[in-house]
Amino acid sequence: MIRIRAIHLALLLMGVLAPVAAHAQSEPPAKCTLVEVLASFQKPKGGVDPKIPASVRSSLPTDQGDTFEFLAQRAVAAARGKPVSAKLANGDALELTYKERLAGDGKARLRMGVRLIDASGRLAVESIIVMEDGAFVIYGGSIHKNGKLVVALSCTL
Amino acid sequence: MSDERLKGERDELLMALIDRELAPEQELTMRAAIAADPVLARKAQALTQLSEVMRAHQQRELEEAQPALDAIWHRIERELQREAPRAVVSDAPGQRLRQAFAYWLTVYRGHLTTGLVAGVAAAAITAFAMSGRQTQVVPPAELAQPALPTLTPQLRLVGASGVDVEKTEFSNVEGSVYLQAPTTPGASPTSVIWIVRHATDCVPTTVPLTPTLPTNSNGEPI
Image 1 (cartoon, rainbow over the protein chains, first blue to last red):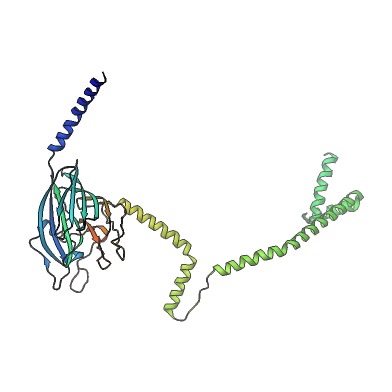
Image 2: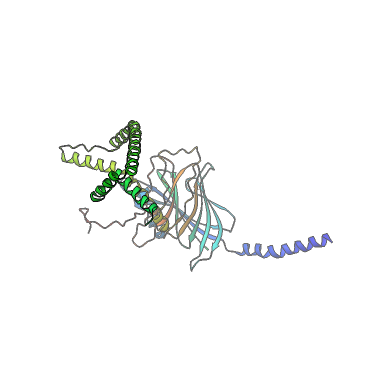
């Protein structure tokens, strides 16, 4: 009798959990874009590298430098609940975790966990952000070459 | 009118006479009555003696208490003199103004403190109410100590940047979370999470609370 109840319970749990798991697997990953820029003060001023995407140019921290050099741009897909790490130009790593999609009025809003880990493996920044589709957030300040590394992060579904 | 009532009224008049509270006409009437009535005269004499005894007793108590009262008054005067700042007048107009301001500040510091506290409270309420549009900054320490973990308070930036920073913790570094003003007109500000490792790092600027007016080559507003 007990064995039959256990089997029923297992079937019930499978019935409940299987669709949830299937939904999680079918949910598209968050598509994130990382744009790496080197910010520094130079004489004469170097200005803004034209390779830097126009959407990022207006977001650059102009108080952290007068010269902005484009370093790299990459796309990172973050599946829900699974951290994905991107190596940065100075050896640091940016770890992204897509947590959930929030119901919004029109634009998709994503809750993301972002961790910045320095080259020696120590955690430097741990943050949780909610981003609108297409919006940028800047992570920066790590030393790189003769300036500071600037990472513009944007995510969408 | 009964005899008892007449007697009562006469006793009241007698006491008023001894206390010198009667009108002149009433006083003359009462003195005539005392002269005509030996019983009333004895009663008046007894009340007079009783009144003198009471007055003497009060006087003695007052005299005994006088030193203590004097000491209290001296102490109050000393406190008043110590607390009341003296306005030193100087011939120099600027110095006189400064002294007058210092005197005013000292006298009204209690009110000033109350005003400041009220102002700060109002500013805090306003900042809370407008938290969606303002910048929150964790100022970096003068000297970063990478060896020690540094956790900032929980910050929440909800701005026009399209990014809501729900939580930020800095470990082993110092950092700031702020809104970066856009470099191009019409663009949205950007949320910035910035690591400050060294004391020589710049302190990130924040979105100005008041818009900067365009100026001409002389620095004058257009």
